[in-house]
Amino acid sequence: MMLDRRRMAVLAVAVGVLAASLGAGPALSRPLSDKKPHKGVAAAHKMPVQGIDVSYYQGDIDWRKVRDAGIHFAYIKATEGGDRVDEKFLDNWRAAKKAGVARGAYHFMYWCRPASEQAAWYKSHVPEDDDALPPVLDVEWTTHSKTCARRIPRAAAIAKIKVMLKALEAHSGKRPVIYTDPKFHREVLEGEFTDYHFWLRSVAAKPEEIYSARNWAFWQFTTTGRVSGVAGPVDRNSFNGTRADWKRVLKERCLCGTATSTSLNE
Image (cartoon, rainbow, N blue to C red; front, top):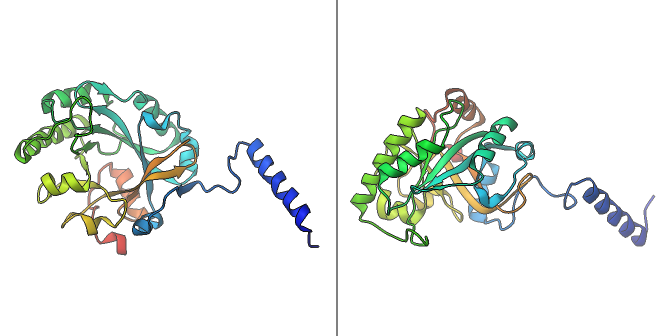
């Protein structure tokens, strides 16, 4: 039997109120979405293994909801420079593991501090955990920073990166991953560190369209993601491989045999 428009409108309001009362948020909301989707990264949404990266900025996270939304992994900010620890790091580190979300830690590199000091700082705040994903070294120019707005020569930057990578591997027992953005890659990293896996930022195109001859393991494809369990925007990422590849990563706790730029099109 068909309902008239007035009765249909009343019913729709009632459904919305019921959903809100049950804590479901906006009616019919999707567990994984993007507030400002870009057509250039549509392929990332379809990749089988999805992840996020988080810091204190995301506030309190319900990691069980994150897991149930379809998130397979999370990279959690741990340290920055040689004197900053993310205030939510340990909470997120423990809660993500408890919820069954594979997680790894990342360090944000500063160019005004000796790499040895930053390595020691990371080691003193990130637990040694055999279950963790390989650590990540986040390298970008920090010209926006209030305390370390500095650029250094390319050779000096590469030297610092080498020190940090060696220290992260010694601490974790796993070969680190390098995160970067297009500008820093173009000015410093292009042609370097070919024996490392990369996590690339590309929010308007596939990574191979932005990064010259660079294989990659992770793709950060939006900063305006929406994921159940996280109150506001969150960076979303995809793993460059199949579900079988990901199972192997979890079993071996390394990215052995992954990060091929062709898997995106398979």
